[in-house]
Length: 146
Image (tube, rainbow, N blue to C red; front, side):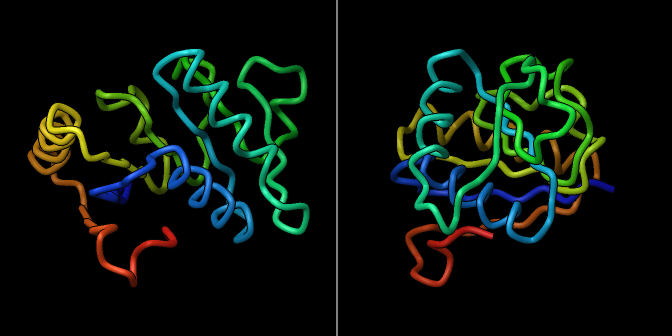
């Protein structure tokens, strides 16, 4: 069953997503980053390109011709995201197909509306019996992501 992990109080959710993607890639995991729109996909794409050279994360868009060979995909359409080890959800809603992944990562920012939508997703997963973990990013031990 998919493990669902919430990172809460993220000052910069995209940076948290970048760090989680880099760490998962470093562990040999395939990662899918689900973005709500093209602007968010562009922003996380730029952040991954800016990762320092020793920690470079090979990535591309879900509709790129190299998507089948690339360990980290960024997409706005869950139908294009193949199953992999980790899905990072940057959308306000739970992604369709999330159960195909070993781990689903939810990153919750600071805005009250974002927090409320995160709580709704938490309740959604909990009522379906998923194993849930929560990391408060205000705590120093959890600031690097998993």
